[in-house]
Length: 74
Image 1: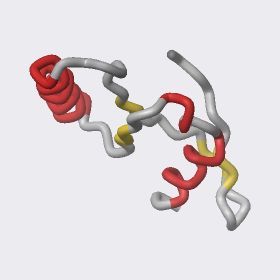
Image 2: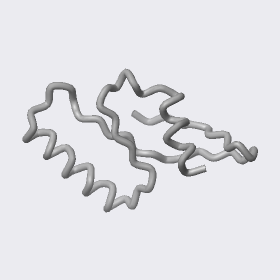
Image 3: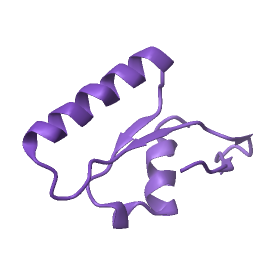
């Protein structure tokens, strides 16, 4: 999924953060989850991502959740 997200900082600055949100499919076998995790780690290292988040339930992926995660980078 490709989305543009405008993040308004508390001090008034605006940024458009690039973040990687990782979710493995529900009901995935442990072996497959290990493969997903390994490929995720390789991608993060190769692309040098700094904003990497994992989520178990995609229903939890809300703007409020994302704002909370991005607030850490303030």
